[in-house]
Image 1 (cartoon, helix red, strand yellow):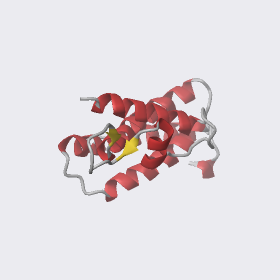
Image 2 (cartoon, rainbow, N blue to C red):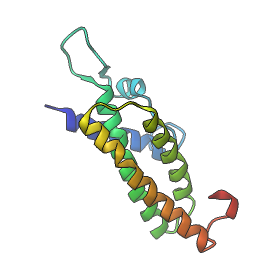
Image 3 (cartoon, rainbow, N blue to C red):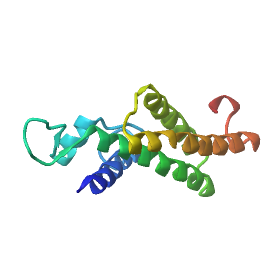
Length: 141
């Protein structure tokens, strides 16, 4: 019943931490246990009936985060921040590599994780365009 809202909350929290809004280093990813601790919510409870965060909700929140970061890459360039897309590209490629290792059986999660490649492509296009215009150092891309 609360799955989508939980995913959105997790995504917002992870995004805020990644941006450096909270007392964390910018560009870091919260683990599912850190999310649970931050929200004061149990994680993967199987032995009792209580509200908790599931691995599926966490992974779906990460796919939403990647889509959000792709939009941020484009908007950053529009605002004159040519370095942020490089940071986003590195981070998203690492997440994408992690998703490729997983054996997805869930239809929704597999479909969302398959869609990550489009966000990766969008971010790569931004970085490529910046490098063509010599707006970033050659070795940075």
